[in-house]
Image 1 (cartoon, rainbow, N blue to C red):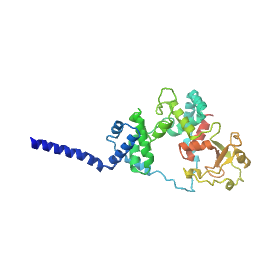
Image 2 (image 1 turned 45 degrees about the horizontal axis):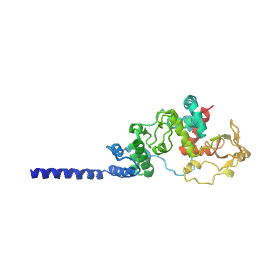
Image 3 (image 1 turned 90 degrees about the vertical axis):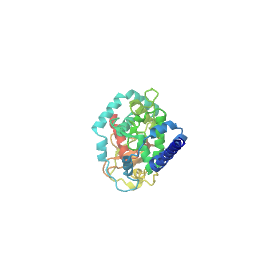
Image 4 (image 1 turned 180 degrees about the horizontal axis):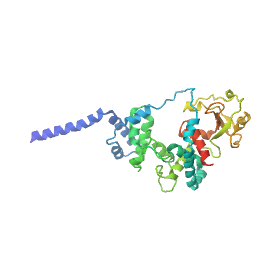
Length: 340
């Protein structure tokens, strides 16, 4: 009997030692153990983490997609804007945007009165991010963010978003709801988990910020993002202008280097007031000049001789949502088309 009991004890000891050793042999699981410690320190319940990390595996596809992203290398070579505009400010997207705009006018106008963010800008962001909810992504966010954080190329970003996603689940958002892009954006406005926790808003009064199923919540959350990013009420995002033939571009060249998205701002001129741009011979296309003291930069996204745009500080707010000139220009142009 003693021999049998000794054998059983030994077997249990082997199993007890083997489990941690097996976990240590898996670098991904070892990494998750470290994340677990940090998440608990940030207030996430251990039971929540253990449930969501159970059987979690690396997703090599999202790692591949992330490594395929272009770097932030400065270049003097630029592609034209016109083809992108044709794809993203097309008749179908404009028509759907107008339908949303009309259906939600009462709520949109209330949100605009509260935040100063134009109704059409909220609609245009939604249209660009997910085509008004037609496609919000089907990647499991917890698995994607864990895989991207483990890979390490942008670990501080993705590990922080993974823990924010765990906080969302811990506070009642179902794991099944957290589907989205391979890079961790979710819902109609494609918020990262940390943005959801900080800026998502309840727009329909049911006590929950449901950016997946509620149009009012989606629009209110987008407006709150723009308010937080510094949108100035009463100013346009920008507008198209004709550049005079004798315009000397060196007089208004940009001498500042932006630490964020330098290639985006490389295409902008220096800042001038509307009065100064008017004196330089710019002519607005289809609209009046804003106040003389409003500051703007100039961009010629299709090169000299084509349509140019004067861009205010509110354009920089759109860039805060997605750091791409083509994206921000298309949002502004879609917004203009939606409210016509």
